[in-house]
Image: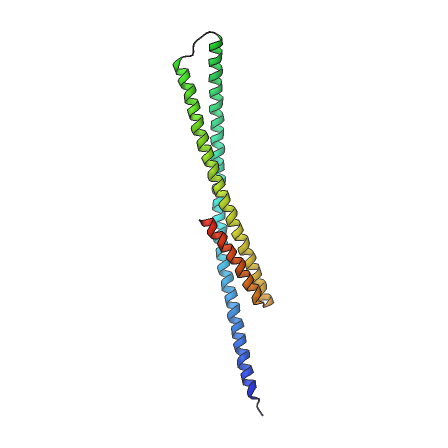
Length: 174
């Protein structure tokens, strides 16, 4: 005699297996999307790191230029002090040159400070994007564990962590 609930159990089992397969497909798909977001975050973060380095190099170059102008200015001032000590007058061209050096030093200093600010800005963006990459990598690892352990709660946890990564990615972009 055939058990009437046997067909029902078989149908429920088939549907459960189908749902498991769908769940695994969603894990795989979401993990692939997270990997793409991690790659984008890494690329953007690397770009900001490079820009931070370039801006810091520009600032260092400007500070070197500032030092050169300072040395020239000090040499000219020393010459003027020697002339005054010897009883000679300082001509207008030397006064103009001293004023010109001071103006150039101020402009150079402003450029150096601006480059330093740009470097700090890019470094801060890099740090935010690095956090995004880290969270995405953690989410990918937990997704893989969820597949191995067949625990949907781990996958949900990985999605929460990925959401945190998305928040950092958005902050890094804007």
